[in-house]
Image (cartoon, rainbow, N blue to C red):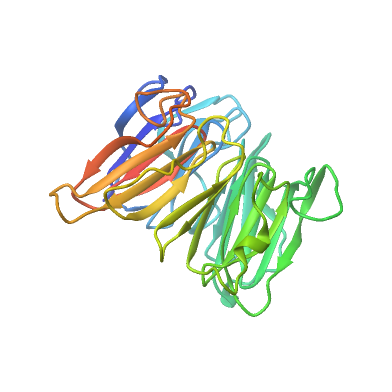
Length: 333
C-alpha cells in the first residue's frame, strides 16, 4: 500500500484532497485500496495514478474529457477509477489529455474534447519489448526499443525538422540505432532522448539557452539522469553527483549551486519547479526532500513565488518517490 502526499496547485481538485484550495505543505491524498502507486502523471489541472494492478485512477479537471466519459462532469472529486480498455502498463498526460499503453501494446488517448479513449495507430508489438509513453503540454511520444514516435505540436520542430503547426498522427521522431531508448524527457517546445546507458542520443525543438548536444557527447557522458521543466533542461551526473541546468531561470528554475550535506538519490521536475531527494545514514529520518524553482501555488513550500535556493519540504525514514506536475509536488511512501 502506498501513502501519497501532495501540495501545490489545487484549483480543480487535482491533488485529490477534500477541497479545491492550494496548499503549501504536504497533505495526505487518500487513494482507496491496497495497491501500490507505480507512477503519478499530471496535466494542466488533472492528475492520474497508475497502480500496481494495472488500473488507473484520476482526479481534477474533466471539462475536456481528461478523466471521465460524462461531459456534464466538469470535475472529478477525489481519486476515482478511470474506465480503461485493458490492463495498463504506462500512462502520460498532456495539458488536457491522457494517454495509456495497455498490456497488449495498444496506445489509447482521451481528452482534448474527446470523452472516451480512442486508439492511436502505431507500428508496435507487445512481444517486441517494453512500450513506454511520455507527455508534456501538447505533445506525446511513445518509445519501443530504439525508436521514438510522436504526435502533437511541431511549431518548434520538436517532432520533425520540417516545421508545421501540428502532427496529428504518430510519426517516427528518431531511431537511435543499436542501443535501446530508456526514456524521453520533454519540455514545452523540445525533447531529450536518453538511452539505456544514460547517454543523451537525440535532442530536438527549441532548446533552452546554453544547452548544446556536443557538450553531452555520448562517448564521454553516460550515467546521466535528465529531466525537463517547460523551459529548461536539468542533467544530473550520478557518478560525480553534480547537477547542471540549462535555460533562462527567470523564476529560479535553474538548480541552485549550493552545497548539499548529503548525496542526491533521486530528482524529478514539474512544469517550472524541481524536486530532489538526498540521503544520509547519520539520522533516523535520513531522506530529505527539497524543491526549487517557481512555487507560486505553494508547490515548493510556504515560501511562494520565485525563492532562490533549495526549499526543504520534508524528511522521511523510508525512501520516498517524488513526482512533479503542473505546479504540483507529489511524495509517495
